[in-house]
Length: 91
Image (cartoon, rainbow, N blue to C red):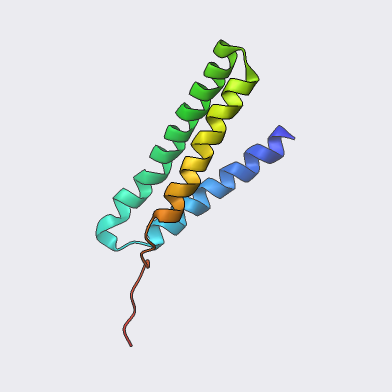
């Protein structure tokens, strides 16, 4: 099971990087390439921190409440972000 999960995640990470590089102008390829690993590490740090807090507190209810608040805040922020087209074509 872990082998299948690892292979799938490994192939997906390369695809996401390629899509990010092809979605921006040539001058911004470095920023697009670096944003993926940065955000992946940020998510990993957040996950480890939340798991550590869950074990430290010892109360699943408290951790569940905190994670629910964070999830709702993330959905609200995602809903409020203005959509910007990747490319503008004239023709």
